Length: 577
Image: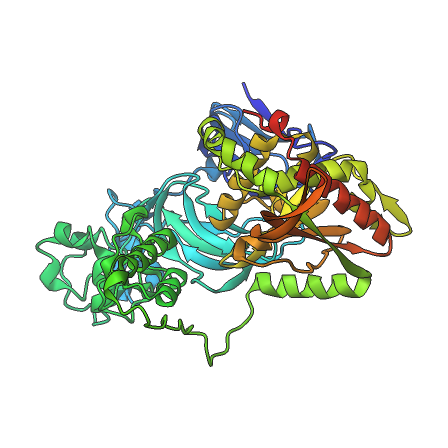
């Protein structure tokens, strides 16, 4: 009996979806909850899991076809209804003769030389393609490979990192196996649907076998080289002990034959510095931080050195001179840190190009100006100091000033929805929720994940959400839709020491709030009806807005409401702990 796989409901107002890729084909065996196909909608791209275990008997909707929610996509049964011609082809190499070993210079011929007991990796390998990553995203740039040729990968295990003009994200492996070939190198840009790599079931040796370009005429025993999908000719000396050579085909490739076709896929960073698994981005970061990669023990998969390892090493290095500071001359000037970018040229990243384009478009299409107020947060600072330890213990989040600013802004947006509005032609649209975009500074540039429905959240929820969004933004873990839908933005330039700035409003939003650093200075206070000088804590709030719809009086009222809320510091009932 067959089970129909239907297109499930994928979200509010989503009525249809487009099949972008089938992860299985007719005749394949599939387990319950295993990925079956990928669907693209106008809101999200996602994977549809199989509702049952069985064999795929029929695929009813082809790739690039659009169907409505509830439509039947495929049928899964016990296999009795699956066409024999569609069954997997892994057995094909077993029927091939071993004689073609003399024609080994062609990489595609090697898999046919394998013994029936060890099917070649390239004989049953499947392409891993760049999936749809969001609406209007047509291409992506490979920023880092998380696996190398020869590594085993599991279904949904991160395989590589991709950068687009909307989001940086990890691409998981669509099926399990061994990575036998990398087709797109780091920093290369390809279109959606392009093949990125190939995953097969055999033990790959493309990095080691083609390393011997010598003629194959003297090879008497091709069966001894079954673990490697390459000609047997070059290494008669290795024939007595193929088991010792097979486990480390990649380690031999870079040192022996740099001309091998798969050499680009091997860990190219394994150079004379003895460091392995180092991506260009991490190597560049290490150079900028002055960190010796050879001194770092990687915490990533396979001992890979991650950017976090480099940053920790840089912190440890900076802490050591600080401890020895008393021995240094007190009058010695601090060393000037000179960037390696000085005197060089570098192309703009995709993210920087997009930010530049949108900033110019926003400035050209809107009438922007900025209003600034100064807020005395002395009472708020005292309240925060009193509760921050308990808050952290109970909520697991640190209580900085930003959650207070976000809560006060969300409340003011409810009172003055014009600041939360968007312009649609000649109409003003007032959203029903306050979705606050939080600007996050990353190595790749500025990104703004969305804190959704902030007006309905307490301080604990806001602090937890901001911490989670910021962490996943910096680790490239965001989903594309987490960067969309914001109605208002907060940029905390004070975290980098700025007193205040005049931030740019990005369409389609109408306003952005810049929060400066909280600093102390003498201030005038009234005590018993008399003015007095006291040390106070202050912060500047700068609101940039679209003057087409928001008047200066609207901006002043909005900021005055926030000022009163923050200076009152009555947040006991909003802690959420």
